[in-house]
Image (tube, rainbow, N blue to C red; front, side, top):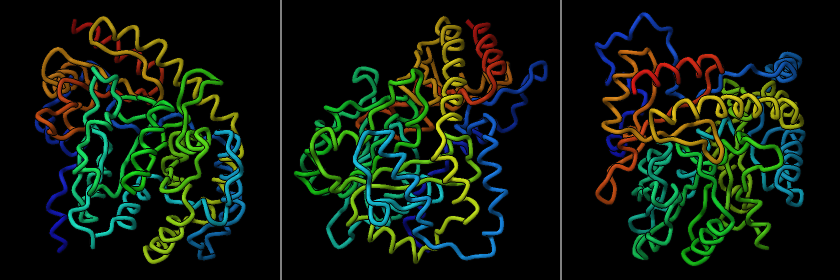
Length: 393
């Protein structure tokens, strides 16, 4: 077996199950699960209908590159969303089965193990796929703590040159998981400057890009930042998904876009990996990317929850509405695991301890003392949970 498999740590939700082993939640309350970032809003009818209308496509093998209509729809969406020139749908866009599998596979394709001691830099706390992708690619993860004193931004300037010299891949997540932090143009400028200087690739995870709270104030994207700075997309690839934007996590549909030279090799890797998207899912994805009405309604539902839930919680814990995404990253007075147990046992509320989303790095676990709450349940369930939490204070 690949010895790097032994470096993989249990996923946060397995650790949560272990934490709750033998604990019975209070039956006086209905359960409210705020632990997992799985969208619960209804899947739009237009996407469901497109899926049904194209089931005949199941009789054909799909190509790894996908149908032209899908890549053209994605290119058009990128241009509308970010104000960038139309990307080449033949060379700069590759459909993927959700951003998760692509974020993992990308490291396997870009890490060059003929160079000594490769490094993958990523935020901490973080989406655990980044770490697993680094280990399985034969690289060493280098964690950059995102802390309240830095407004939860990645301090790229703190990375020693000795680390940058070995870095081959930098994972950035904006809006961030779990903090919802959105990178500024100046922060992107620094990331691009470092990529130019040291030659590493930037993998920009933007799966939460469409969950924000004020229409007309969409988060800045990596391709948009590059365009505003007068750059091309060299050594830059973004990862996006319909899961959160369109409430179709079970469809497993997303895309990567950016540097054509890198994507040519990534497409070759995926062809051998066997990662083609179902023809019916491709057709439904075209319908999703071509429609914004359902996305605006989705944002309205999240904004309503944050507007009503956040004030209720602020008397019990230190939290505020994030820049974007659907998580509340709340500071606790004591142990995050103890609070998670208490909420589950006494109030039948499931949250995720922040320490489960981070690693000990530079002397601390930056998730320790925080909990992550995903406001994906209904407004009433989220309000019920917030009122129960109020009763603890």
